[in-house]
Image (cartoon, rainbow, N blue to C red; front, side):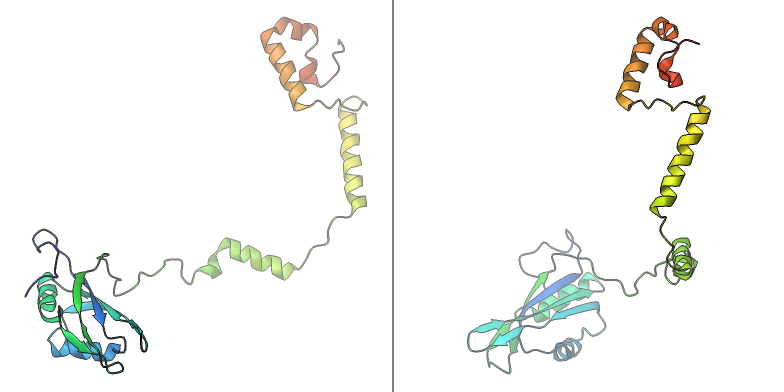
Length: 207
């Protein structure tokens, strides 16, 4: 048995996955498996992926490709010794194809059993999903009218005036508040003389 051509020895690069190229375009997967079983490799690989080729006579021929992941390196090298350069005849075109065996660039292979998602079949207990169902059962809610919003704002304004001694509170921008706070921090005495207007929201009237 010989390793795939132009590749390191098994002692320096232990790999178990190969790609078989230049298979006949019309070669079915079942026929390829029969060839594997006939050569004694039926139970020596665990994963197989077969990409069928295309045959558009008389010029365009796209060979088939097979990927195999063997159980161990010994099976891989035995396979390479048998199938590297093996001749396959294409029934449709009558041409002969010589297979090549190489290490697969990506050595990982899919697992036999997919991992189960722990969240599977748990949507009925999801809080957001339950909230969504409750909203559907409640139906669409009527939007607040403009008159209702105006009444709410008037009530808030009246409450603010009562809290400010019957006067409308002075609105101060964030920039002005920042300037006053910075000036008060730099000169606390001036802030006390002004009665701390920036903190009371007034216009600097003495008590």
